[in-house]
Structures are given as C-alpha cells and as structure tokens.
Amino acid sequence: MAWIQIRIDANKETADQISDLLMDIGCPSVTFIDSQNNPVYEPKPGEVILWPETTVIGLFEATHDMQSVVTYLTENMSEPLKYKIEQLEDKDWEREWMDNFHPIKFGERLWICPSWRDIPDPDAVNVLLDPGLAFGTGTHATTSLCLKWLEAQDLSGKTVVDFGCGSGILGIAAIKLGAERVIGIDIDPQALVASRDNAERNGVADQLEVYLPENQPEFKADIIVANILAQPLRELHEIILGFLKPHGAIAMSGILEEQAESVANVYAPYVDLDAIKQEGEWTRVSGITKE
Ligand SMILES: C[S@@+](CC[C@H](N)C(=O)[O-])C[C@H]1O[C@@H](n2cnc3c(N)ncnc32)[C@H](O)[C@@H]1O
Image 1 (spheres, helix red, strand yellow):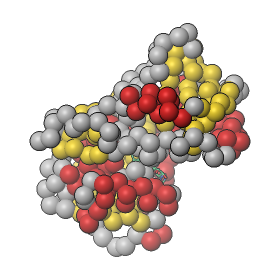
Image 2 (cartoon, rainbow, N blue to C red; image 1 turned 135 degrees about the vertical axis):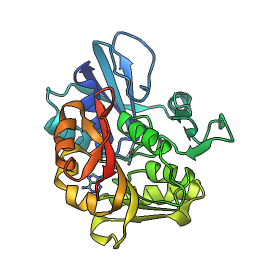
Image 3 (cartoon, rainbow, N blue to C red; image 1 turned 30 degrees about the horizontal axis):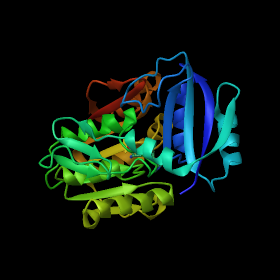
C-alpha cells in the first residue's frame, strides 16, 4: 500500500494536542521524533514527550484527502500550523512502522498484541489489535486507564457498555476478561465496522453488539466504560447513567487533568466516586452508582 505523511513542527506544549487531533480524524499512525535527531518513537501510555522541539508525524494512505487534514488542524490548533507533506517509499516505512509496535501489558494479565508479533504469554488474556486500525490501540493514556480499570473488575457473566467504542478495544478486552455480553455504542459508523472486525479477529463477535446511539436497544448493564471527552461525558450523564443497573460500575476517560473535577462534580450526586486516577495529562473518573 502507498502512504503519505504529514510532518508537523511541535513543542512540549503542542505535541500531545496535535497527536490527539490527528487521532480524532482517524490517522492510523502517529509518531514523534525529536527534531534534534533521535529515532522515531511511539510514546508509552501516559508518557510525556520531553523534547523541546518535536516533530509529530501522522501517516495516511496515499489516497487520503490531506487538504482536509490541514484544514482540521489549522481550525483546531492553538498555534499556527507548520507542516510538510511527503509521499513515502512503501516498503522501508512499513517495516519501520511495524518494528515500532510491541505487545503492551495492562494490569496483571491483559495484553494488547499487534498481530505480527509473537504473543508474549499465551496463558494471559490476549487481545489482538493492529495499530493500523484507527480508533484506539492501547497506546493512548485514556485507553490505558480504561483497560487497567477493566482488568481489575470482576467481569464474569457481566453485561458491559463500551460507550464510544472506537476500535472496540475496551469491549473486546472486557469479553476476554469474562464479560458475557458487550454493547458497543459509537457515533461513527466506521467505528462500528472496526469494532465488529476486531471482535471477529478475536473470536468474540457473538458476544459484541454495536449500535449508533439512535439505534441502541433498551437494556440495563452491570458496567459501563466510556472513553470519549469531558464535555460529552458531562452533557450525556443522564443517558450514560441510565444504562446502568443499581450499584453498577462506571469508568470514564478522555478527561484532561484540569477537567476531572468538573466531570466528577456532575456524577457525584449519583456515583460513589473512587480517587481520580491520572496518566500523563489524562485522567479517569470511576465509581459505583448509588442506586
Ligand atoms: C478516544 S476514542 C475511544 C476509543 C476506544 N473506546 C478507546 O478507549 O481507545 C472516542 C470514541 O468515542 C466516539 N464518540 C465521541 N462522542 C460520542 C458520543 N457522544 N456518543 C458515542 N460515541 C462517541 C468517537 O467516535 C470515538 O470512536
């Protein structure tokens, strides 16, 4: 497959924002390089990039409309966009990209493994997921916070909602950790396709249902995990809490450190909240519903 990349000048303050914006528009691979010369680097969950001058590289299929990428970044960035767009030689790049992704462990027993790598521990709970598929691959701190929370729950026989399912990574992990049924909900139809494909690849398709919000059926779940953003988490709190049975467990991420208190305040009347958990600049708000 042919590829095209956008190289964007960034710094310590803007690198994460640019990475998040690229992921928002479905960029299948975001990497950082030190503008002063260090090798290509995929940050670990929650890791903060420290180089003063960083280049953020977003990779797209060659047919992608790069003008729409530039427009989206320009409209949403806090600083003027400085970038270069380059066509890539296929083979060398693909090799380098694949070399950069390794299985990642979350908690005691959960691994997210790219399909081209050996599974480090066949007896562990292994989710196969390729970083080439957008919408969440475990390398982002918000996904990591949710995976660690799920790994610590007793999911046996439970019904779980994956709200903002993206790649389906959280729902698939929940099934592999013991959940009986997962309902994935996303506003993006492509995310529903990706979730279904990934569930099939992991042999759990018969336990995962996916819906657009307007099509979701009536149901009550034991657990909900919602990795979207602070604003929709606040605005949709009645809908989100409405999915849960009494004393259901909820974990939310996609919440920046400075937004955590405002999300917690909205949920506090209905949820006995745990201590807020943080990775890098991202947080997780979780707890058990009071009724
Ligand atoms: C950051 S991704 C999370 C993907 C995956 N669950 C993870 O943890 O890596 C957020 C997902 O939420 C979806 N989303 C955003 N707002 C939503 C809403 N109001 N209702 C449902 N899904 C939403 C987006 O389309 C996107 O797929």
